[in-house]
Length: 252
Image (cartoon, rainbow, N blue to C red):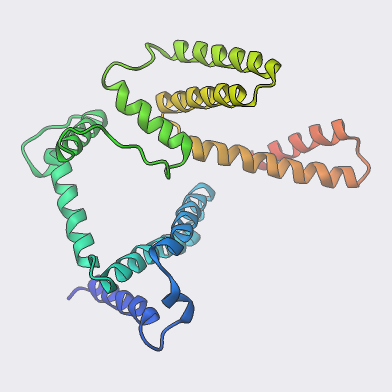
């Protein structure tokens, strides 16, 4: 048995001990449903560590995310649904099926061709059924998934310029709706703007969740500097501009 196999077996034993008789009361109470929040939190903490370039923290956060996988598998095993071995075999089988250009006789000369093969294999496995789009997925990511799926059937913007024109058109419609004070119409038009923004992200290959988090963090830092400068007697406009300059110097 290799060193990594021993360590993985020890980790599995540890996680099972947490839920066994004499284990941790909190861990023993966890269910599929209660773990949902922690799975999301740990995934975002992995992303944050990557964004911060914090490799030491990244190692820890990847471990925390792995813990959620093990807990889910252990709970499933307790219920005689599946076990970790089933998860590993299913994943290994899927990776081999979805990569015939690596494990078979297909050829993929670049990233796009490889992705097309993956999606083609996935469609075959789904018996060519219409794709379902989970509403649990973050809304902007779901919008990208839907658009990407139908773009293969010709439902797509002909150019980047056309999607920017579409965005301006949606903003104009939102402005008109705002004048009516019809909250349902305003919501619809704002949704159209967000859907169009999601498509811009898709075409530019930008993850909207990551982009928005970065902008939110930037505003948060600028706002904290603004409040500090205000407390020192600066006027609002001056404080905001100074905060902007201070933040720029920090990021250089």
